[in-house]
Structures are given as C-alpha cells and as structure tokens.
Image (tube, rainbow, N blue to C red; front, side):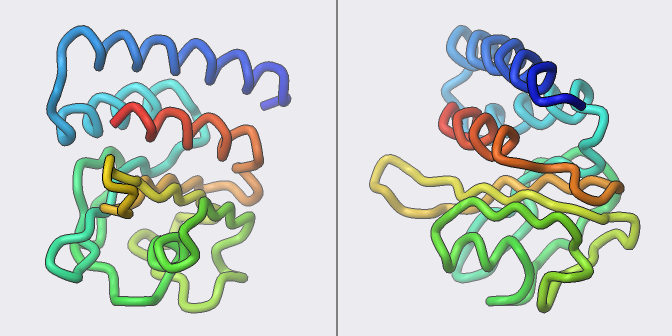
Length: 152
C-alpha cells in the first residue's frame, strides 16, 4: 500500500475506533477487542492482530483475531518481550532475522509490536500484529498503531 493511501486509511480507522470506544466503552478488554476487529478486517496485510498482557510476570495472550496464538510467550524471548524490555515499538521486516523469534504460526513473515502503557506509565502488555508478507510494516504503521493503542 502506498504511503499516502496508508496514512488516509489509518486516519479513517482512528476516527472510527475512537468514536466507537468513546461513546460506548470504559472496559480495557472491550476496547482491545474492538480495535482488533476493526484493524484486522480493514488492513489487508494484517495476518494476526492481538494483544499479549503481563500477568504475574508472564506474557499471556489477550484478545486477538487470526490463527491460533501461543498462550504464553517465553520470558525475554521474541519480539513482544523485546518491545517490553526496550520500552519501544519494534518493526521487524523479516521475523527470520530476529534472534529468538517465537513462531506461533509459521506463516508469519513480518511483525510490529507496540507497548501498552497504563495511566501510571507502566507497560501492561503489547499490541502484536503479524503479516504473512515480508516488509509489511513501517513508520506509518508504528505512528498510527501507537496512537490507536493510546485509545485503550
């Protein structure tokens, strides 16, 4: 998708998601599920769209759309833990090049992970999006997904 088209699509989706959440939800899990449903069905290169949440020191799957997910992610391995440990969004053009990548579905080729930060400025989990194509994610995805995650 060309950058201009991607920017415009994200702007429309952000507005749609924001309106849905602001008028009807004060529940974090409901907000995550709504965000997943909209993004997963409107962004054709999103193969798996979901959340992993920190629970008693474990990173466990939360709401998601796509193929079956890993329930627990091994501590300090993979892109999700790297994003938590580095406290920043990570864009991975080719998951095969990422050390200790966790392959919940072998069809995953590229990935973006965005930390979720609560009102106390603590990371409570991550949004994780996989694509079955290489090089699917860029700075536009990172910018807009960070903004969308802020709606949670």
